[in-house]
Length: 208
Length: 119
Image (cartoon, rainbow over all chains, first blue to last red; front, side, top):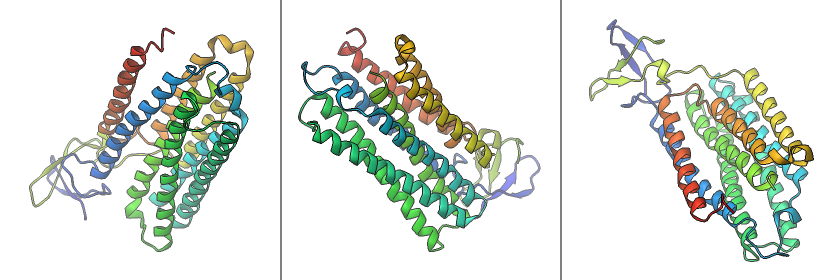
């Protein structure tokens, strides 16, 4: 839909490319919806993080504890991978906004691969932890840790699927520059998943 | 329409007031690729500092506040630049900050109820 705007002062017609149909706020409804969704996700992860903090250190002495299992160098590399995927995501957005579809696909695929690497790393970490005796039922720390990081991993997996969908759409020529906002919305979700990991990495892994 | 005040649109339902550009209603100047790369480098360095801090015994006394401060810096850099909250509409900022504040107040109260801060 073409946005034709009328300057209130001059009274002349001016073409406005807002990138979305006219709305009562002047903002994209989809983008407002995405920000509202992300605000609600703050409450979800807030609940999971505070539950972890509440249960941390309340297990019986001798029970498996964070210091027994965490591999900080390994998780630091995973964190770095996810952080860099935020960079490739904004580069994909910048590319589609200037109509460079080849680079858009390159950066979308790179972001998806970095995200998949993070999830694979988490799956490996979970496997090691389970071998060392941790599982969802063994104690409060294990239950809250797997629930928190598992929910985050599920969010990353959904993000990877959305990125691959965008890549597929772009390959079929169904992601023109006029639909750059779709990439921006997926990007917002992706960056949100990244900032949640920034909090989890500090509170769960780095602070003893 | 750069900063020229509210703009109305022709619609079958009548004119609609659009948020002016300085409110982020339509077009925004997002950072360039070089700026994104600089932000990513800063984020990488801050992450390296965080990890180094966690091994450094000299900062053991102030480890938790230092790490929380550094993660807040990273959080706001990603939200401000990569999510464009610095450059987009104030409405987005208000929505997101409302979610964060609600979560912080709500779960701080929950943790206080269980004496997490005092134990």
